[in-house]
Image 1 (cartoon, helix red, strand yellow):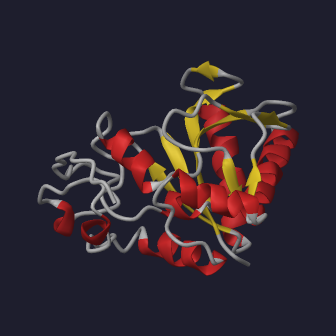
Image 2 (image 1 turned 90 degrees about the vertical axis):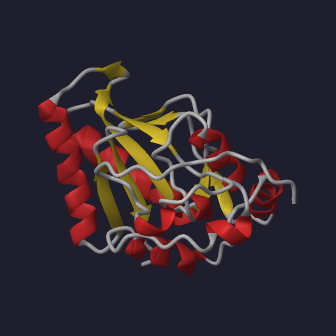
Image 3 (image 1 turned 30 degrees about the vertical axis):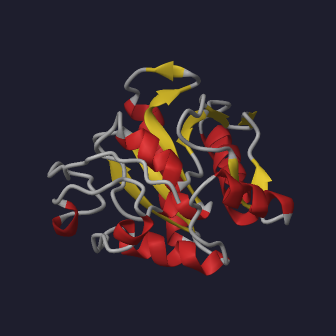
Length: 206
């Protein structure tokens, strides 16, 4: 496996999923080193949920293609009722079936609650290669394994609604109401990321 050397220093800002073990510089696509990085307690449930779908860590495009070909991953439409997927430079619009269904349910519920408005999906499934490229421009991207690496996580912006980048407390509150609803049902975990202005959502294998 070719190593893409990308020296990273861990950030101490709020929202980092990896802390003490990630303070040292790491090659960003050295699989053995990535596995050694311990997640925070806040993020661990996301990884535990991800491992229950029977998907191995997505290292590169070939592994994604394998899950597409065997019917494990399903294509996410660019837009649907209540949601829009922005241009994805560092992730792929494919997810496990429950992930796709949950995104669609959230969009429908959000649209109904807000009388036709839509939220923006900013990131979906990532490989370790994708994360490597992302960390070259965003030092807050996961230094270790991410739940995005299993195809059951996605991010929703809380500053972009109806395709417009603008702070909208009313829409943000409506979005969090939807997230809390599915969290209370035991369907998802979510974290509010302040640096990236998004909610990181992981779908559980209920």
